[in-house]
Length: 202
Length: 287
Image (cartoon, rainbow over all chains, first blue to last red; front, side):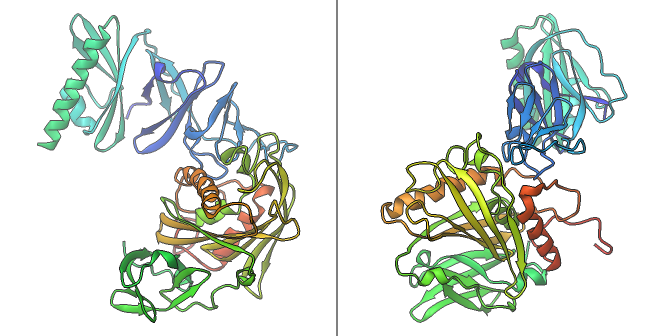
């Protein structure tokens, strides 16, 4: 799999929002504080394993729903409400992945040393879940599992579609376009999904 | 999945639910520790069978109890059940997709009140967990947490205003736990709220709440609805913990001082070598 993986459309993670995503069977979450920077973390509070995607964003911090443990943008725990006077040891931190935004998508990487791709800003079309193996989806759309993006000609436009593996039999697509007719492009992608899923069922 | 081979789990008493939920003559299908069971209420008692064999049965505290193995001890004592002025309220069963051990640990936890039971059992303005005491009572093989105090905006169904509630917790077996708490109307006594967990599979549980309370104002329905509301809030958390099995391996989770009772509970489970409902460990030889 590519070093950097597109996991959501930026549009779908507005300020103040958390979002759960499954990337190759791993549960991760995205959140965006007031500073506008998207963070991609393991979907698990180190305290008692609570999924952080159920937490709440205040300012530039993410708070776990279970006990209100507060994490800053650097993933370090800032506050443990049960012990208001405690200076939280720096070893207590959420598990953060390298995150980047480019081409209208949020990207994650296990290896923060590799630079993220640089893509022009594009218009978000839609994210679609397809209950079909990525290998088959990419073969159908003319992409390659070695590349994080699929270029799909549509009308006068070329859609740039990021993809990620949810698990062996499920694919997520994140479609963007330069000047695409969003309604028509969405309908086109939904029809492709229907064909793929029916092909699997057949 | 079939019946666990975990000796420590087999040799315990488990509830299969409130007696009132087993009507006369009817055969009820149930499941415990990965094995299917049938329960039949007869004129002269209750019969529990699994894989063709009859299991031991107890009917105590309004609940039906059984075991696949040979429990070292009798069912725990609950002296408050003999006090005539207590109301007996059953609440449940509630099915939860999580290890029963996670349910018990959540029951022992004070620190979540302001966030999970906001403006009921806790408030964000008062999140502090004061130091409390824990002990393992080896003569009865029980865990106790005492001198627990927490500010509660609405401590019980009958509460009109906030109070500092006093709590004691008592773990009587890996899947059975109770708390003692000051009632709003009788500050010199203790309400008892028990959580009897039926571990169905490793990561599927049925929770039965049982209350023995001093309250002459609320109706049964109000008492039950209050507990139900609290438990539904807990269920959201319990089904979203990862892993859903309780981790006993050091370093997998991060306890603080407020988690003292959980630390003792996990240590006790390890001492018992209980595996059912725990995350498989990779740090032990021959694991």
